[in-house]
Image (cartoon, one colour):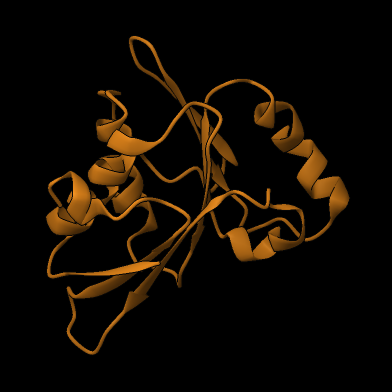
Length: 148
């Protein structure tokens, strides 16, 4: 487990980018955090770290956004509205697990019981300082080891 403190959206994106540099295809990144914590900003950086250059936006209404790079694919889920098995099946989540790309899942607390055991867990917490965030990452190598 590692905890990183960021002071801006750009720094939150940078931590995401560093993690995106390290993941293998098929990885599942489970994100936890309150509304406005920075999960989508983290995902923007994560996509960039995977070599995917695109506009990343919250998939709140689409439930899943697909971002394709030259050699890699990222599936960005929002599980905020998921309240049961029927809702979860309707997202195609189980099919995406076998699609070969990476999955990054906002609001993972809503599907925690079915997350893969080996998923990388990212928890973003607001602090008393408006732009400051604590980012806890479990299940990945320390980003300091790769220049973070």
